[in-house]
Image (cartoon, rainbow, N blue to C red):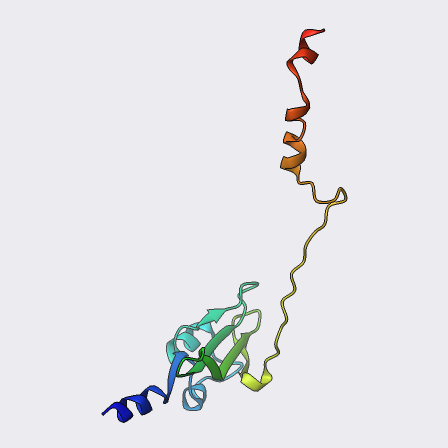
Length: 139
């Protein structure tokens, strides 16, 4: 019983997140004919959409694998992009996989001040200890 329990703990677990339409569903959409409304009716509301100028629709599906104590790992990702022209008619349908993606390194940018490490607050309150009551009384 203990051996069976140990073996089941070491099997990989797979989970799917999101939704990307199948090729059969995409066959129902005709570029140059269908509009935003018909795309939503046929394959559903997109995972996300473009923000500027009524951008395209994006359907994203990811498959994750977790093995024992290790962190979850993305093993497959499908991104379906449907773009529209100015009139809201389907212009193009593209599918991208995990192999099409690029890793974007994030860099931390720090703006240095010209006066070293003194912050505004430190400079503002820095002279509090240098004032004496006698300086005000002599005037």
